[in-house]
Length: 71
Image (cartoon, rainbow, N blue to C red; front, side, top):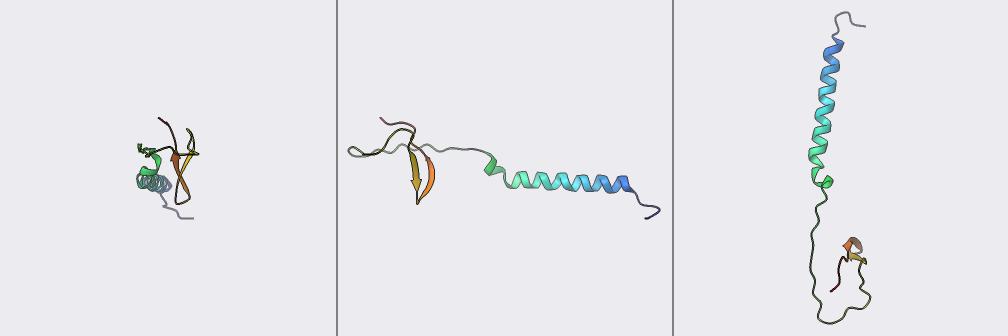
């Protein structure tokens, strides 16, 4: 082992780098942590069979939302 190694300084530097990495990851993925929703009002000309409140909405086979209200 080294005689003049400054272990406290190495620990502080390692901790600071780890905290910096965690902050970077949180900032990079910040948009995914927020749950922003868009609401769309869609008007159909005539009745739509099979549509009910709470039904899943799919776009290209991927679930993108739910039906919240029917008027």
